[in-house]
Structures are given as C-alpha cells and as structure tokens.
Image (cartoon, rainbow, N blue to C red; front, top):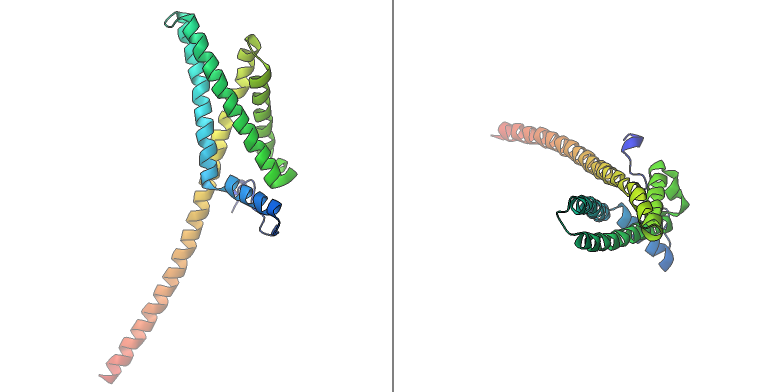
Length: 194
C-alpha cells in the first residue's frame, strides 16, 4: 500500500500493558482510529460548518432588513455559543489524540495543521468578540480541511477492506480449483470402477 494511502496514525499492538492507564489509552486510540470516531468528527465538523454558514446568512438577512436587528443579534449570540461548544469539543478531541498517541501525533503535517486550526479557532471563539471576531472567523473556515481529511481516511479504510476481500477471493479461487481437480480425480476413479 502506498504511504499516502496509509492511515496517519496506527494503533501500536506492541504497546500492551495491563495498567488501567495504558488500557484507557489503547481504547482511546482504537476509538479515534475507528470509523465511528471518524464519522463522529465528520458530523461535528459538518454541524460546525452549518453554524458558520447560518451565522453568515443571518448577518446578510439582518443587513438587508429582512429580520430585525435584535432578532439577528440574538440568533448570532446563540450560534456563537454553539460555535464555542464545538470549539471545546474539537479541543477535547485534540487533547484526547495527544494523550492517546503521545507526541508522535505531531509527526503528521496534517495533524500539526489541524491542531493549529483547532487552537486558533478556540482562541477566536473564547477571546475575540465584535469586529475582530468577524475577521478572525475566517480561521474557522479552515475546519473544512478536516472534512476532506476524514473523507480520505474513510477511503483508506475502504481500500484496506477491498484489499482484504481481494485476498480472500484469491484464496477461495485456489480452493475451488483444488476442489475441481479433486472432483475430476474422484469422477475418473469412479468411472474406472464402473
């Protein structure tokens, strides 16, 4: 398999330890590498992007006078709180990844970039308000990168499954050929007795 098609982080099977700490790290690694974990992050990223898009739409509608400024402000505040919740969840995921994989997590350029985007977005959501928040919200759009990376991760998983199925098909075809040879031999043996 090409290096570009391999998952960025693999679970290390050699890290077997009976300690609760190591067991928890192993389960966390397994979850973060699982399809379910990728789908969960994909869902969070999608919802976060929807909130960002909704905030822009509300700003446009408010500027055009289609909704009152007070309603637009309330909606933007609510979306801002939801955005902060998403930033906290992404920070939690980042911290869990660092805890589970250690500093080898940062060997991947993508993970370094992703961590930078998560931390910058968190800082923007927590510290900046007003005009600075509007300018800095462009950093949040970089979260879309995560969607593409997760899709790549899922395609790598599908490719690995396809390779496993191809290997299984080859084994079954060899077994079938062997059985056909055996069947032909048995038939010829039976015909010689008849």
